[in-house]
Each structure stands twice: as C-alpha cells, then as structure tokens.
Length: 284
Image 1 (cartoon, rainbow, N blue to C red):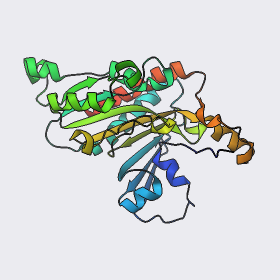
Image 2: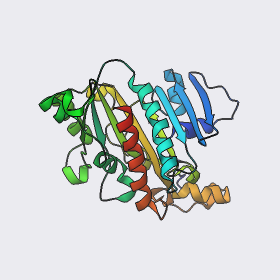
Image 3: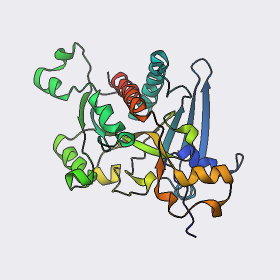
Image 4: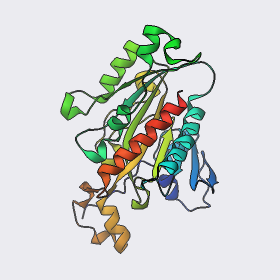
C-alpha cells in the first residue's frame, strides 16, 4: 500500500518529529510564554544547510505564535494577539528608515480555507498611493511606511504562476520587502486556526497540500520575503493514523484529502482582521 506522507508547513512541528532533548546540528530553539495573555512564542532558528536538510525547511528564522483562544470570538484577546504579532513583524522587518512594503495575499478567495491571504489584504491600510500623491502630511505623520498590496489569485484563475505576477510587480514598484500571507497545513488538528507562523525564509505556496508552486524568496524575486501563515487544514490520513496508530489502517488515497473545521467561514474572517491589524500596527 502507498505510504502516506505526513505534511506540515510549521517549523515547530517539523522540530517535534525529533526527541525533545535531541540535538540537531544547525538548529536551535527559544521559547517564551506570556502567562497573562496565554500566548506562547517559539522561535526555531535553522542556521545551516545541515539543519535545513534535517528539518525539511529552508535556512531562516521561524516564529510560531500559539494562542489557544484564537479561534474564539474575543476581541480583546485578538487585539493582544495582534500586538504580539506586530512585535514579531517589527523584529523581522528591522527598525530604522521607512520602508516600502508590498503585501501579497496568496490563495483562492473562492475556497474558504485558502482565502486567508485575500481576506487579510481586504482589511489593510494601504498608504503608498497617498504618500506618493500628497506626501506624509496626508497621513498626519512625519514618518510613514509605503504600504501597497496585491492579490495575485491562483494559476487556475489567472493562467500564471504567482511568482510571475509578484516578480513583475516587484520589478515595477521596487519595494524594500515583501510580506506574503498564506493558509498553511498543520500536522496536528489542535493547531488549526490557533497558530500563526512568521518567517524570514520566504514562502512555498501549496507545499503543505502537495500542490507545489514556485517559491517566493529573496532569491526568486530579488527582495527579502517575510511569510505569515495560519494552518487551516490538516491531512485526513494523519487524523486516521493518530486515532489508530497503524499505518496499514490508513485507506489508500486518503492522503489526498484535507480536513478543515466546520466554522471555517467565521474563523477566516476573524483571523484576517487579527493579522491585518497586526500589519497595520507594525507598519504605522
């Protein structure tokens, strides 16, 4: 029988494949828990090619924000998550001069679990056109990042690779950095819609569900790429295996099916506001 492959886009879950105290050359981990806010931050540093090979992830920094109540309708809690996420984004963006930032909402707006990126872009405060037309005075501030955004869609809608579209926009508008938002796949159903991953290693659209597209990285588009993702689906084969602990009991072909929570419509809407608020805070 065809052996199913456990899929995950989360570096934290890739690290959990190894024993807790196992040392992986070229990989280090830092953890911080905010008891008051009930938010856990885990930073996975993949520092060498050896570490990248062991983890199955590119070299870079992966920050995982775990918030157990993120799937609940608690505006105060979501605000706290937005503030924490904004701090992580500032850390990866760096401080200093104002930047031109292109925000890319990856995914298919017509498929709810894949609509996170487009929904986030819909809630953003974009400023590039205002600053270019009227100056910073239009925003009532002396300092302003130039924020622009794009929703490139998917190949079935456009006939083009996402990379082709984004690279063309980058070449024309010349941003300092790209921030890409996408839905991810998780290994554990407990992390669905409760976890946010931020990384400076770029993004690989569709990799979590086996639909590999060209990567968006510094190497492919010419500027740094920060990726923000939330796991919205989990492999059905993994759920069955977790229940029975027997690979032979997993029906053939089940690894092509993915499961998402029944309240995904409201959850995506809520999560998109949380992430867009974090971006608005970080880039204000």
